[in-house]
Image (cartoon, rainbow, N blue to C red):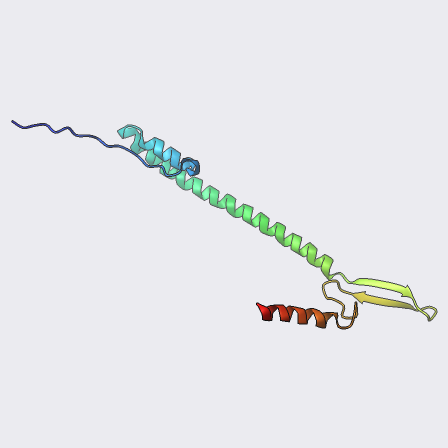
Length: 133
């Protein structure tokens, strides 16, 4: 006489973080819960949809990145144009018919502005701070 041992079907699934679970993962999980002939057919069709979906997401993300790159590039170009435009100052001089003209570029600091040793003092301060570190 043989004894029947009870068998237990353990069917469980592990979902680590339901909040981070994508819709594709949810659909796959739902398909796996379906009955036998239907789940195989659904998985087959869903594999095509999944490939199409990921191709679409990649193209959409790439186009968004391209748009951001164009925007950043145009913003930088505008800033460069503003910084590169020379400033022309004209004021009357002591000689009649002539003006004193001063042309400066805001991107390049003028060595004649301020005290003659401002640059030297600033560079020494930076050097002394880097020596103490």
